[in-house]
Image 1 (tube, rainbow, N blue to C red):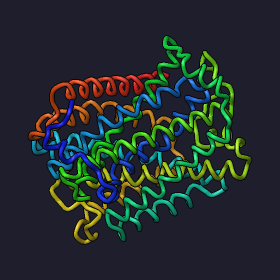
Image 2 (spheres, one colour):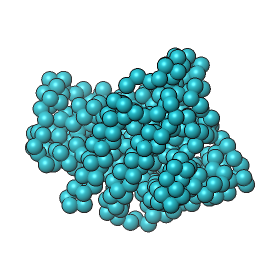
Image 3 (cartoon, rainbow, N blue to C red):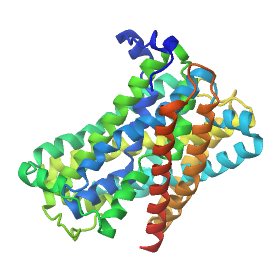
Length: 418
């Protein structure tokens, strides 16, 4: 499983290199803890106590293994994911992946904006005003900034997710109960297995693969930067799952209702979660900490999914698609970026049933994941030495991809039937 000696010789990561390279991994991982993931983690803690806590940490290597492939492809080839699919498998497959990705990105964007609308409602801000402020700020950010400035903004906003750690600590979870429930796994309960599948299925989103590879390319990283980029990805994987664990702990400790049969209360919206866990810190500070945490994850994810859609369409069409380009130089890129935000905001403001819409998005993600991860695996197998995915490492990665895909599809099917 060791890399080729030529890679090993470059394995030392200095602080200066890490500071220059870090960003894509942290941003995409912070976006992975999006509004939908917050609901999933809170639901897990509310219904099952700490019985899904160990799973959050077990998912860290899965996140890292899959996203490391995107780093490897981006640094070695200097091309985005859609461009590589077109090069190796043909333009038709590239268009299939990009069109379905675009739909999935808009669906994910609806989830993020609805989460932000929920935060606004906590403070009496109308949904329409919340959408105008959020969409306007994101468009101005993209039009006036560069990739580096947007990356820094995303990391700074994403850091607000750490507020969930404070909530978990103040909730004072009972350690004896935590340990007992963590090792008490109702492995035969269908409802428990559904939430296991939901957590696993939410680990790898299709847009994460496309975003990180394109971000690595846009940042100008090369094979010499691979060790630092891997470290950036590993740190991000740990941070995002620690945040997920903190949300689960906060919900479980605040409600103290997680039973062995999963009969805890359902937390389906931002308002439900806020009402359940904010009393831990008091009405004022609890609401503020929760609002900061949800805003951090939702805004970061909104930036990532919108950039992903705009970049990949530009890649497959062979036009300029970088934040480093002026709007006059990349009109399609900025039109797609702005249009996706405006469209999603209009849908959220209209009051459409977002629960039903979320099921459709989940199905789309599940159907797309086998293709995305399959392309990712086979592209990594076509890399030149010494970066090619092969041998024992290739077998392990294939097994991880297979398990992740199966659980993603299972979660979606169960979501439809439930």
